[in-house]
Image 1 (cartoon, helix red, strand yellow):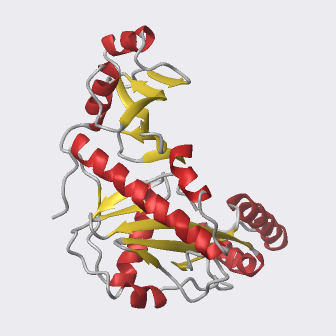
Image 2 (tube, rainbow, N blue to C red):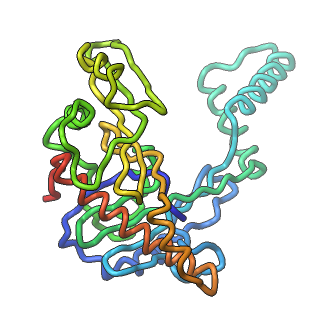
Length: 301
């Protein structure tokens, strides 16, 4: 259950989560109805085998999972049937339908198709750090992350979480690290970056498997390009790509972290997942607390 991406939101660390489980129980995922396009709600983080637990808490860390069911009804299918219906009506009645009538006919077709549409299940995991006032959602999509935060807000009644805000432009800090400024303790450069010319429609250079403090990269910096994504490593535990949008992508747990799991034997899958969350929550917290002062992230009011 290791997260692959991290989209962070901040909230006041004084927030009380004592009633969270009650709220989650009222917002569980319901099967999508015959005439519904989608359904959202919380699912057990340990999977379907554990139908009673909607959160897992370890110290100040809480693991949640937001589930979804979406009907697959391609627009091309609807439009094809609509066109056939319009042709039939025109042939039988010798007239073309107006805009409103076409719209009503399309809506009728959608209602007719919905009960037979395939359902695509989805799940997005999240970790809440109560002590440090942040929630990390396992996605690189801001829209998806905001939907999960909205689900938590609905369950709790109030959840004043906002996207991260840096007091200094993140690209200037990322650029300075490649240019030779010292990195925060524990961080080291990886082998991937994206550089952009700040002018409108400026050039974009993407580098992979590249020595970042090289003459080639230096020439791009001299030409005025700025770093918008940068691969980094936290000790020998985590590797990731940090974007100027403050989203963590390509998160990978390295041998230095995973070795801790292999040293212990666990009886069942729940114990294994619990151990993985213990490792994940500790590493994500350490990563956040490393980046917070380096990127000058604003505190939540």
